[in-house]
Length: 307
Length: 258
Image (cartoon, rainbow over all chains, first blue to last red; front, top):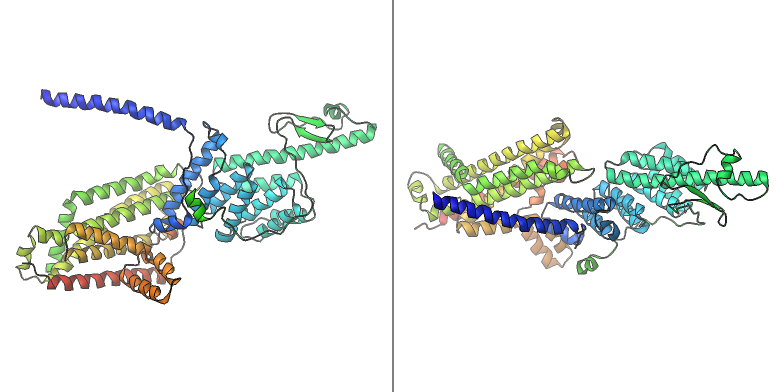
């Protein structure tokens, strides 16, 4: 009986020591940002999945979700690492399961919000070519061209494609006409983003769309304030120094709040209104190019295997 | 018929006593139940994660159960010499192999049904009802798995007729992997020369086309499975298993047991 108790206590003591080491290792692991070390080629993964492609696709999708989620919350240094692995990861997920529509959509939105427009377009175009016939893919490419590149002609073409997809609302064809006539307004961008937001099922993607909604609100307010400045200057005959003059002259009742938490300021040299904390403004580009429908993987399988 | 039922009854009782099979079943049940918790890690597509993890767990563990039970089906009887009192009775070798195989299929089917009930309970909890039984090809997926395990069991029984349980398990697992890759390999060979194409076709006939019994994606995307498609797959599986079993009977009938 005594030897049994001794063995039990020895076991307990050893387990306690092992747990201390284990917790120390776990803590070190938690302090490191979540990263994906290697993304295998889609072709190799399809064969290696041995009939469980959607299952393996889901495992990599869960990895992509963690990758996105940690960068969004800015946990540790993850937010500084950027989204370098997101496109290869979602490319792999959709190679394994080309019908994973939500993966194309989420990656497209997150990459666009991170300023990686080419990558966003690439994965959304892949979705248009190989994925389910969702209207959100061309719709969001249209948004990228319109809002971030100021290329209304290309944006209009993608909006037209979106309007012809099943489930697309009438607002999309109105937007296509508006963009084609080069009069796309921030109000339409807000409507577009709200329609997109209604299709997402998670907080992370909705959060990304909210950030873009703020940009659209900023652009709407700035354009309104610039019109008011022009009106006041026309009345007075001399330039204004600050936006507060608009309120004092009763051109507008109040300066709207900056959606990014700063305040709107008038930059006389540029003759533009900007947010004090976010320098974004919509820049219109002349011309445009035809949408290309040939999906090109960001790198060859061989290149990815060697990485 | 009575002899077949008696032998299969003994096989079921034996199988239920095997710790390995029971452990695999417990692991599968735990994974199916855990699929709900794992699905909370994702955003958006929770249903597909539950279905993917649940069905893959059922398929992997069900296949392993069929392999390990099937591999020892006859080989272990020979190694332990428990076969001799049976064949000394008025039981033909064909009846013995068929009876053992029927018992194996009954066991794998029973295991699968237990896993399917847990999986259905998880889905019913997540989807708040049993409408998925009507809206998804749940029944067709389970039926295809029953036949898939029957095919794997037949291959294991075949190898078990002329080699040891360990080698039989290794050979069967190799055949399962080849069966899962067969459609890819044929596609690869089709791009090569005529000789490679002929070899590819021959291999495609010999190894089981397990992709024909894979309806998991239809369950994930709630696709309707046409009856003709399901019946073709199930028919292929039943015929392949029957053919392998016939070979097993032929090999075992000629085997010198001295």
